[in-house]
Structures are given as C-alpha cells and as structure tokens.
Length: 44
Image (tube, rainbow, N blue to C red; front, side, top):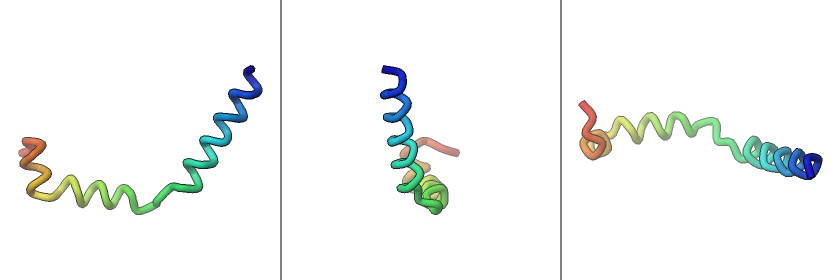
C-alpha cells in the first residue's frame, strides 16, 4: 500500500512540475493590484 501511495505522489508531483507556469506569480500580482479587485476585497 505504501509503495503504491509513493508512486501516486510521484505521478502527481511530476504532473504539477511539468504544468508549472513561471509567470503565474506575475498574473496574480497584476490581478490583485487591479482597482476593482482591491475594492471587492475591501483592501486599503
């Protein structure tokens, strides 16, 4: 059971790494700094 779990975790890890977008932090930063988003989040 433990070996099967380890293999499953490895498959998930490889999937996540291969589908990583290195610009995703830039997208989040830009989105969270939009005036309408900050207003909706009640940010000051």
